[in-house]
Length: 379
Image (cartoon, rainbow, N blue to C red; front, side, top):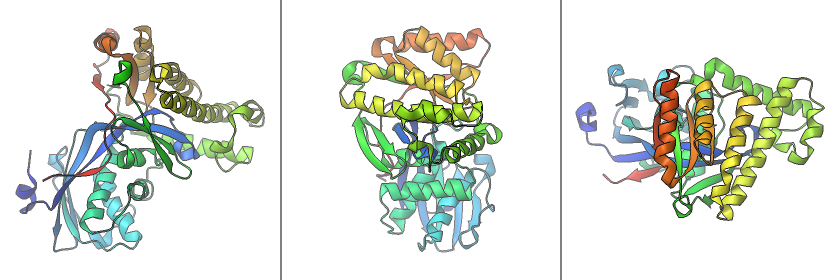
């Protein structure tokens, strides 16, 4: 792999890392002011960064060497001017400048082992590591939640992806051994212990290899449907529809599609609350059925699953897994599977055999270990 000093002719001023994430429960609730429960992965995007005299931003990805460095004028960053992967880190610099921060020129070399397109937030890791590096190098003193807000603006306003703030908050704020209970309305957060080893459990990630790109705008379509549903119910966001009043609320919606979308969001918020309570009580083993119920809701009411994700869930639960669900935006990507530790190998084999049996490419299976959020690394 190319080294920073070979690429740019100077040693980096520092090294930073930000993780990908999986979401234990709480899918498509973040842009509805709802509740989420993500954990950071040990897989990270790393950035070696050096300051330069000229006011230019040079970006290079070790995963896309053929593209070479992307060379940008720091003072000419405008919405729509940068496309592809470089829009995410460039968007961070743009957002910080829009906030009035004085930045100088930079050379950045990125390297990552967060799978791209797998629903594990590779874009958020790229944004957050850039935001943390710039905050440190230019003395901005941004707290983790502020880094996440900057990263979300980069994704929404600069890169043009209408995501919620779940991914960025997870990458910036998670701690090892915990899941992050996040209220996306006010960004109130609490670290909830996820003591899998103590209860003899493992959480597996199954990357189906189906690359989603949010199914040509379907993600944005789901968000618009949720906003339409909230407006029809006269509430600021679907977060404000009480679980206990869901049935009555559904009778006031004009069509079946909106009823399904609203039902998913309201019941998913309730599942986050139930999973949080079980983890607080040290009863992680009991969350499995709630994970599986969440997948059924995403498949049937929100319609963001795909045959490969469904195959993971049905195969794993039939093989004895405690629970399983798709994770991320959907239309492809990854699923998570909660298993007894001694059933890890057998469950993984069952999923691999099922994919082979129907002619799919074998998925990648690995363990999700709750890890630390973004941090500066020793040189």
